[in-house]
Length: 180
Image 1: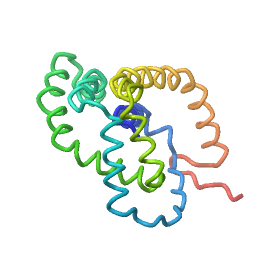
Image 2: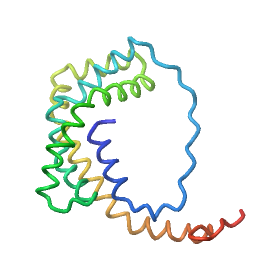
Image 3: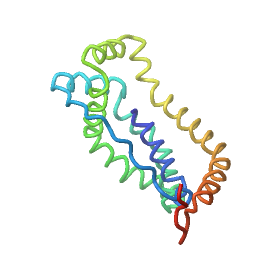
């Protein structure tokens, strides 16, 4: 998952009201996947680094969304939220960026084999792949904007249906679930 997409999910999870989710769904049981070997992990990390593009550019594109997140967390003044992002958030993300690359590499290596990762790496080493990597921050921004607009458009319908489902199941404050 791209860093910006991860950020979008984080922002959306903060933006969604907790009260609209009566009970969390049980986590699906994952099939055990064998750990990738060191060579595959190395290739996966290189691919992730190629896909992310310039680290500084990626982190800097996160500034505006993170200002919004600071405001959702209670820092209402945009200038103060911006200061927090520049002085705290971006430096922390920068300091831990390699950890994210390792996590993403493990994810890619657990889904794609060495040959596929090498092919993806070859694409990102091509002129078109390099242009895509450079464009990724702008594309991610467009994806986040589109996702946010889409969520805002479906939220009223979703919230109404969630409330109906909660009532239909008998969930809520002091209520017991209806037997099926």
